Length: 203
Image 1 (cartoon, rainbow, N blue to C red):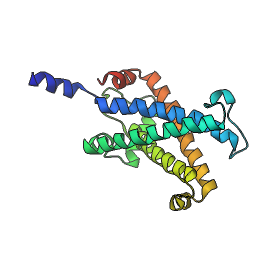
Image 2: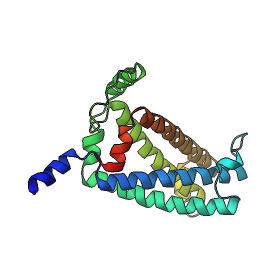
Image 3: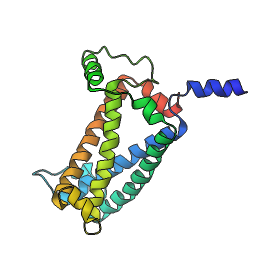
Image 4: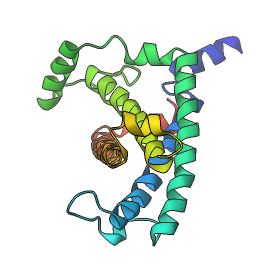
Protein backbone atom coordinates (compact mmCIF):
# COMPACT_ATOMS: atom_id res chain seq x y z
CA UNK A 1 0.00 0.00 0.00
CA UNK A 2 2.80 2.37 0.98
CA UNK A 3 4.65 1.58 -2.23
CA UNK A 4 1.61 2.43 -4.36
CA UNK A 5 1.10 5.76 -2.56
CA UNK A 6 4.77 6.63 -3.01
CA UNK A 7 4.58 5.69 -6.67
CA UNK A 8 1.49 7.85 -7.17
CA UNK A 9 3.11 10.82 -5.41
CA UNK A 10 6.25 10.55 -7.51
CA UNK A 11 4.19 10.43 -10.71
CA UNK A 12 2.27 13.60 -9.84
CA UNK A 13 3.25 16.74 -11.69
CA UNK A 14 0.81 19.19 -10.10
CA UNK A 15 -0.71 18.56 -6.63
CA UNK A 16 -4.45 18.96 -6.15
CA UNK A 17 -4.17 22.26 -4.26
CA UNK A 18 -2.16 23.75 -7.14
CA UNK A 19 -4.66 22.66 -9.79
CA UNK A 20 -7.62 24.03 -7.85
CA UNK A 21 -5.94 27.37 -7.16
CA UNK A 22 -4.78 27.59 -10.79
CA UNK A 23 -8.30 27.29 -12.20
CA UNK A 24 -9.78 29.61 -9.56
CA UNK A 25 -7.12 32.20 -10.42
CA UNK A 26 -7.84 31.82 -14.13
CA UNK A 27 -11.59 32.27 -13.55
CA UNK A 28 -11.09 35.30 -11.29
CA UNK A 29 -8.67 36.98 -13.71
CA UNK A 30 -11.08 36.57 -16.64
CA UNK A 31 -13.97 38.05 -14.63
CA UNK A 32 -11.83 40.92 -13.36
CA UNK A 33 -10.49 41.69 -16.82
CA UNK A 34 -13.86 41.75 -18.58
CA UNK A 35 -15.54 43.77 -15.83
CA UNK A 36 -12.46 46.00 -15.60
CA UNK A 37 -12.77 46.85 -19.28
CA UNK A 38 -16.34 48.02 -18.65
CA UNK A 39 -15.15 50.15 -15.71
CA UNK A 40 -12.34 51.55 -17.85
CA UNK A 41 -14.82 52.54 -20.58
CA UNK A 42 -16.72 54.69 -18.07
CA UNK A 43 -13.60 56.85 -17.63
CA UNK A 44 -10.90 55.97 -20.18
CA UNK A 45 -7.26 56.62 -19.39
CA UNK A 46 -6.17 56.52 -23.02
CA UNK A 47 -7.84 57.53 -26.29
CA UNK A 48 -9.62 54.24 -26.89
CA UNK A 49 -12.36 52.10 -25.40
CA UNK A 50 -12.99 48.36 -25.34
CA UNK A 51 -15.87 46.98 -27.46
CA UNK A 52 -18.95 46.67 -25.28
CA UNK A 53 -19.41 43.03 -26.29
CA UNK A 54 -16.03 42.24 -24.74
CA UNK A 55 -17.03 43.63 -21.35
CA UNK A 56 -18.95 42.24 -18.38
CA UNK A 57 -21.51 43.91 -16.13
CA UNK A 58 -23.73 45.74 -18.61
CA UNK A 59 -23.28 49.08 -16.86
CA UNK A 60 -20.80 50.66 -14.46
CA UNK A 61 -22.58 49.54 -11.28
CA UNK A 62 -22.90 45.96 -12.50
CA UNK A 63 -19.28 45.87 -13.64
CA UNK A 64 -18.11 47.13 -10.23
CA UNK A 65 -20.07 44.36 -8.48
CA UNK A 66 -18.47 41.70 -10.68
CA UNK A 67 -15.05 43.30 -10.26
CA UNK A 68 -15.17 43.45 -6.46
CA UNK A 69 -16.49 39.90 -6.16
CA UNK A 70 -13.67 38.57 -8.37
CA UNK A 71 -11.15 40.77 -6.53
CA UNK A 72 -11.80 39.03 -3.22
CA UNK A 73 -11.70 35.63 -4.89
CA UNK A 74 -8.38 36.47 -6.57
CA UNK A 75 -6.82 37.97 -3.44
CA UNK A 76 -7.81 35.14 -1.07
CA UNK A 77 -6.98 32.39 -3.54
CA UNK A 78 -3.71 34.12 -4.43
CA UNK A 79 -2.68 34.22 -0.77
CA UNK A 80 -3.46 30.51 -0.44
CA UNK A 81 -1.49 29.77 -3.60
CA UNK A 82 1.57 31.73 -2.44
CA UNK A 83 1.29 30.33 1.08
CA UNK A 84 1.19 26.73 -0.13
CA UNK A 85 4.08 27.34 -2.52
CA UNK A 86 6.17 28.68 0.36
CA UNK A 87 5.01 26.08 2.88
CA UNK A 88 5.76 23.13 0.61
CA UNK A 89 8.94 24.84 -0.71
CA UNK A 90 7.60 24.28 -4.23
CA UNK A 91 8.45 27.89 -5.08
CA UNK A 92 12.17 27.25 -4.57
CA UNK A 93 12.18 23.80 -6.19
CA UNK A 94 10.29 24.82 -9.32
CA UNK A 95 11.46 28.36 -10.03
CA UNK A 96 15.02 28.55 -8.75
CA UNK A 97 17.88 28.81 -9.53
CA UNK A 98 17.25 31.31 -12.30
CA UNK A 99 19.66 33.63 -14.11
CA UNK A 100 19.45 36.11 -17.02
CA UNK A 101 21.92 33.94 -18.93
CA UNK A 102 19.68 30.87 -18.58
CA UNK A 103 16.63 32.88 -19.67
CA UNK A 104 18.43 34.18 -22.77
CA UNK A 105 19.71 30.68 -23.61
CA UNK A 106 16.28 29.06 -23.38
CA UNK A 107 14.58 31.97 -25.13
CA UNK A 108 16.89 31.61 -28.14
CA UNK A 109 16.22 27.87 -28.23
CA UNK A 110 12.48 28.52 -28.00
CA UNK A 111 12.59 30.97 -30.92
CA UNK A 112 14.42 28.34 -32.96
CA UNK A 113 11.85 25.67 -32.01
CA UNK A 114 14.51 23.61 -30.25
CA UNK A 115 13.38 23.97 -26.64
CA UNK A 116 12.62 20.57 -25.15
CA UNK A 117 9.37 19.84 -23.28
CA UNK A 118 10.24 16.20 -22.60
CA UNK A 119 9.92 16.44 -18.80
CA UNK A 120 6.77 18.27 -17.72
CA UNK A 121 8.01 18.27 -14.11
CA UNK A 122 10.83 20.66 -14.96
CA UNK A 123 10.27 24.27 -16.01
CA UNK A 124 12.74 25.83 -18.41
CA UNK A 125 14.17 29.26 -17.61
CA UNK A 126 11.64 31.07 -19.82
CA UNK A 127 8.74 29.36 -18.04
CA UNK A 128 10.24 30.12 -14.63
CA UNK A 129 10.64 33.82 -15.43
CA UNK A 130 7.16 34.01 -16.98
CA UNK A 131 5.41 32.41 -13.99
CA UNK A 132 7.37 34.50 -11.49
CA UNK A 133 6.59 37.68 -13.43
CA UNK A 134 2.88 36.90 -13.55
CA UNK A 135 2.87 36.33 -9.78
CA UNK A 136 4.44 39.78 -9.40
CA UNK A 137 1.93 41.27 -11.85
CA UNK A 138 -0.96 39.83 -9.81
CA UNK A 139 0.45 41.39 -6.63
CA UNK A 140 0.82 44.76 -8.40
CA UNK A 141 -2.71 44.38 -9.77
CA UNK A 142 -4.21 43.85 -6.31
CA UNK A 143 -2.17 46.63 -4.67
CA UNK A 144 -2.89 49.19 -7.39
CA UNK A 145 -6.56 48.19 -7.30
CA UNK A 146 -6.63 48.84 -3.55
CA UNK A 147 -4.93 52.21 -4.13
CA UNK A 148 -7.76 53.14 -6.52
CA UNK A 149 -10.62 51.68 -4.49
CA UNK A 150 -9.45 52.89 -1.05
CA UNK A 151 -7.55 55.98 -2.12
CA UNK A 152 -8.59 58.01 0.94
CA UNK A 153 -8.23 55.18 3.46
CA UNK A 154 -4.84 54.05 2.12
CA UNK A 155 -3.00 57.28 1.21
CA UNK A 156 0.43 55.65 1.67
CA UNK A 157 -0.43 53.03 -0.95
CA UNK A 158 -1.88 55.67 -3.29
CA UNK A 159 1.30 57.75 -2.90
CA UNK A 160 3.45 54.65 -3.44
CA UNK A 161 1.74 54.26 -6.81
CA UNK A 162 2.45 57.88 -7.67
CA UNK A 163 -1.05 59.22 -6.95
CA UNK A 164 -4.57 58.20 -7.91
CA UNK A 165 -4.25 58.78 -11.66
CA UNK A 166 -0.92 56.99 -11.84
CA UNK A 167 -2.35 54.09 -9.83
CA UNK A 168 -4.94 53.67 -12.60
CA UNK A 169 -2.15 53.53 -15.18
CA UNK A 170 -0.24 50.97 -13.09
CA UNK A 171 -3.43 48.92 -12.73
CA UNK A 172 -4.04 49.07 -16.48
CA UNK A 173 -0.45 48.03 -17.28
CA UNK A 174 -0.61 45.07 -14.87
CA UNK A 175 -3.91 44.01 -16.46
CA UNK A 176 -2.41 44.33 -19.95
CA UNK A 177 0.53 42.14 -18.99
CA UNK A 178 -1.83 39.48 -17.59
CA UNK A 179 -3.86 39.48 -20.82
CA UNK A 180 -0.63 39.14 -22.82
CA UNK A 181 0.49 36.27 -20.58
CA UNK A 182 -2.92 34.61 -20.90
CA UNK A 183 -2.80 34.73 -24.72
CA UNK A 184 0.76 33.37 -24.86
CA UNK A 185 -0.12 30.72 -22.27
CA UNK A 186 -3.10 29.52 -24.32
CA UNK A 187 -0.98 29.39 -27.49
CA UNK A 188 1.70 27.35 -25.72
CA UNK A 189 -0.92 24.96 -24.34
CA UNK A 190 -2.25 24.52 -27.88
CA UNK A 191 1.28 23.68 -29.06
CA UNK A 192 1.93 21.29 -26.14
CA UNK A 193 -1.56 20.01 -25.20
CA UNK A 194 -0.34 17.50 -22.61
CA UNK A 195 0.39 20.44 -20.32
CA UNK A 196 -3.37 21.00 -20.14
CA UNK A 197 -3.96 17.35 -19.27
CA UNK A 198 -1.41 17.54 -16.47
CA UNK A 199 -3.15 20.62 -15.03
CA UNK A 200 -6.49 18.74 -15.16
CA UNK A 201 -5.35 15.31 -13.95
CA UNK A 202 -2.21 16.19 -12.02
CA UNK A 203 -0.06 13.73 -13.97
